[in-house]
Length: 149
Image (cartoon, rainbow, N blue to C red; front, side):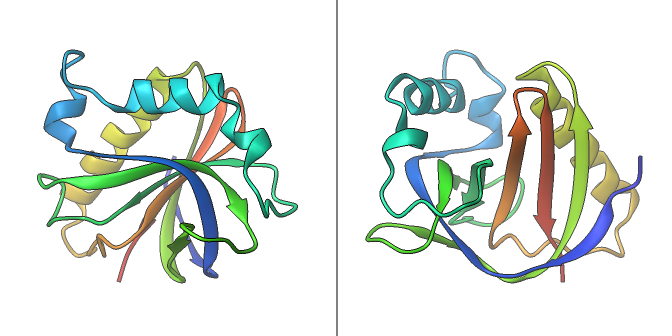
């Protein structure tokens, strides 16, 4: 399925964050994201985050990119908030949205592989590497938004 290009207004997310690389995430010994999401759910961060707004989705926000797909980046597992100290702003702009349904976490890793393949096949598209985000509508549905110029 082809992604859909959408303009996204800026919004804020608060939660837990780690810094990682795609190389580290491919190795279970160095992967940080499963622990991040485990902590997010174990500590019920989604239920205790102050200033949560009406958006019930959970978010994985990619930010603080060092460079490109090969560099380090931050990932925040969180919820949409109206304000608050320490919240992260997802930048306004155009995003390609890749949607998928299936079993986690294979659903997410498979969709990111689809995204990398898509950008490799479409060199005319330029990723912004500012903020990207995963929006989870349920336990088996994700929409990954990748910022483009």
